[in-house]
Image 1 (cartoon, rainbow, N blue to C red):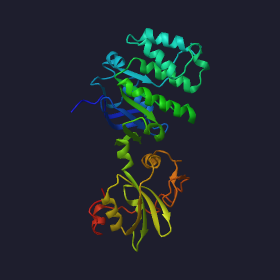
Image 2 (image 1 turned 90 degrees about the horizontal axis):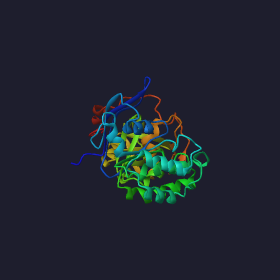
Image 3 (image 1 turned 30 degrees about the vertical axis):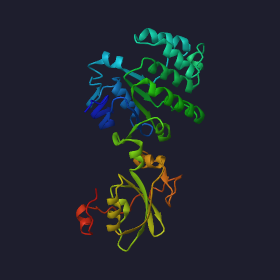
Image 4 (image 1 turned 30 degrees about the horizontal axis):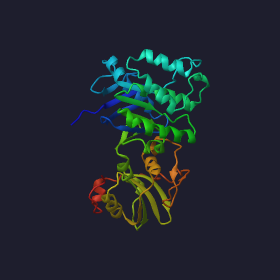
Length: 339
């Protein structure tokens, strides 16, 4: 099996006593564009900076093309591009000066490619960096990272500072240039819609760990909204470990089931429910179900299995009494497994 371009093994990084990422495991295959999805502040930037060697891990290890970013620093810098900071140390520098300085720093600079990318993103050579829009500054950072055709490219929230119109243009630009770059790309964002059209693989970061890693199609198939009616003696569906979100619906519930399989429906029936409908939610709702625990003020899917978001009822989403639902308890009702 080919070695992954990026390997994270039980990676942990803390600031003070607070662990931002911990026990993180991730492989990014060679030549693939991979998205890293997570809410703001969950550790995406910490992860990318640790991969690039700007931060030292407190636990675990990182390998980039088989190299340690700290011990093999020079080789890793030559192999990687990182777009996540301001394009210039001085806001008075023009676009032309930034590109000229970059060509002096990097021995593998391709001036023709730099000019082609500058035209693609419509950046004026004589404009000082401090007078560029946030979107144009992000584009300049991206150009500097792409020109060298790095073997591994890290893009940290390239859509963070742009409005919806510019976001669409940036997405189109990445769709145009990334396949030609021939790089392995790890691209972070907190918006699934930004990543959907660009990436071939998606990793979801929650609670400092990767909770999903697979194709976008696999993600689409991993969650269902299930409408159930409670029969006499039915359990509280929120006690099931793979139910992430549950809304009251008359005599029943509308629940979100993650890591969905048909066996989950059998367990719901055994727990005292009749299945009324099984629906496949949209990609944004699916991503929400994986990320919901990371944000105390997160949104909740509206009751009735609708596909719109609505403010949550935190008391409605948590049982007032927690009964430990053990496999043995369910086996007494005929269920095969909770997992």
